[in-house]
Image 1 (cartoon, rainbow over the protein chains, first blue to last red):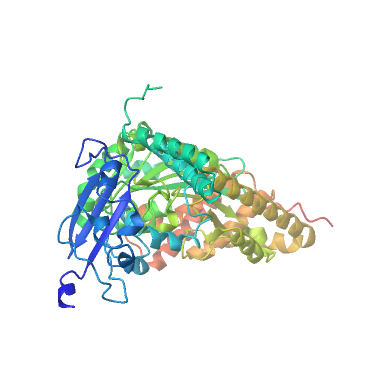
Image 2: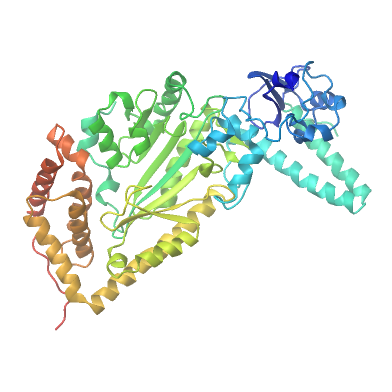
Length: 206
Length: 361
């Protein structure tokens, strides 16, 4: 318990960003699309990676990184975390309650939403995504955006939606054991993803 | 840059009911909430963070061609009466009026567009049109939005759309509303049913000055609540359809009253006229109630056409801050009531007694 108290507030976040900031991957020169934020005792560190470096680092599943929640034990330990800063303790779900997590962008705690009805910054939506989504149903017609998209983000937005649709089809193909179709879908998805990571020059390869 | 006095001298078309069909739907209003990435929302930001981000935002807004020679001020530069006047003109929100340094308002010359900077969100783009013209108002504001998105890094999420300080606005960030004059439904006691029916469709009905206010002068505001999961077009067409229906209901209520109880109607309209014309002390609530009935009378042909315009500009000019601005000093409530009566009496000089031609017998 003493050991744990040193790391009383530890949380990790993995997010895929569609925001058009031209950030570079810290390991190669590709455009960073995966942002990994870690806060320990209030000190935050942000790591920007491209998708392929991210999966090399073992960062693949956003849900798999909710350190501080009980899930981490089910995830197993080291393999998922290899390459990440040393000294990240394995949190042995010390308490029943989840620690009061704070947004790495602005320090806003989710509990504050209940008091003020407002969030701290746009990053809060990423960090508290699931909690927020759980609360949206009662106020809105739907839970995902169906309106206008800023021009600069239209391409990324469409690709993203396309990928999500393909993923659904892929899941369906796999569950119906149609592996040929699944393979084709996977290739199609890879194709879109690779276009995404090398944006400016259109690939003229056959 | 436009001065406050200029803004006061030239009220916008929509404030005086310029549209030929604003008898029931006075105005249509569109508001878009927008934020930029990498900066805390104004409500959560520290004061110095708000101040730091303001010049950039303000500059981008001021350089829009639509905002040429605009009225642009930090809230800290405005007196409390001036701020209140802007609230009464629906150019800023009550929330913004409470702010000072680090918050600004930019209004175009004909006061059809206003941009609140560092209100609840970094940007609140707003446009108002006379009559039922939601789409037209939306087009105006979308044009500005499209220009701003080129030069500002908007906070946008692939799943949740435009990100806003309050999750109730997330998605399109679009709030569309119309202001309706519904004396027929109030007098015939059907307003409760209508409010309930509109509420069931996921739309909100509120009093004249939005959230948390009672309805004054039989004026109601109908707006969308949901901003996520629907396109702008869907939101606007649903709202428009409902407003058209409410307008139809109000028309029916008026003709029914005419048919069933013309004496009562003639009595209400004529007395309202008399009260306004001969009052020496009148509070805001009473004035709005009578003006509403004179306005109704104008629609029923008891007064010449200009009467409606006269009512609409009076609605605004007799508000507390407008009175104090005219008086150039703070006024106690009793002083305001006297001044209000004075203004109404003088404006009604030109309006002759009602002609009641709907009583046949």
